[in-house]
Image (cartoon, rainbow, N blue to C red; front, side):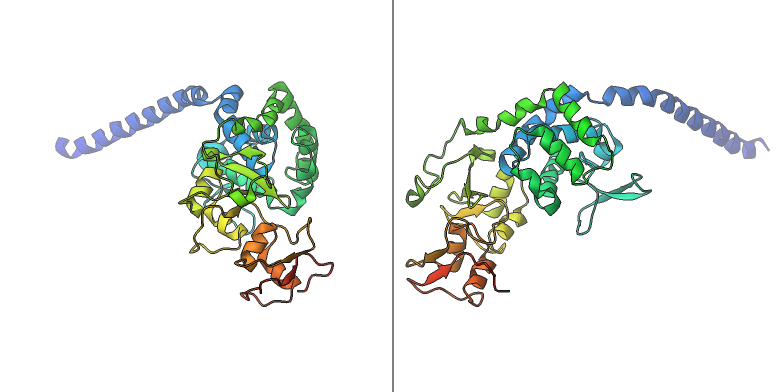
Length: 330
């Protein structure tokens, strides 16, 4: 009899021990969790550099990026931030193909984007604002106009909280985040690539900032670009500029199988539909439709359309190409 009862008694005491262990852990866990939380000042110190870098590339004030990160993620301590590295409360939306997490927000069990690390969240935040038309008007504001950006984000519907703009402004002013909006020029201090601009382009463009790996950033037709270095590929450029590699070949009317040459103009945002500075261009020897579209910072498809040319057709030397049209041909 005794030998049959022994296993059940041991099992009983084991259950009691497990229950006590769980209760003990639950009692301790709040204090342990509170110790692991980071303060607002620690959060700023952790992410100010990437906020400045994103400002240099995308023209989003670093103060706004940091304030949104603080507000949306509870200074990096929210469940969305700790479990999904999502610091800006960005939901999945149509077209999102990455990982996700379900949380209750405006509605129960909503889909939010999940990232491998916080840097990806900061990068996606820049893409999210720069690639959606409803936020386009914000990029006409001065980089130091954090109040205009805060009110504009609320107006564009970034958040439903009626006090969203006021909360962002308060965070910026209490923590003096506006000082980071003036630090983009610090990236211009060192340039180990003095010959980065091709000789034929010398004097035509002036760098306004330097991004990762000391890459000079220029503008043409109102769009940012860099000059490719020897040995560059899409992945190197994407890594230095903290963007996705597919964006590089997409923005430049290329495929992932294409190669870059030293001195190529490589755009890091979508090109425009037409040239704002010139109406037409006479084709020089060796020029292609693609090289001309890069030269004027305009989409290759539009260049073909304006000139009634079939995609893939080569231009003739001395041919006049239209760079804009009042009524583009569809």
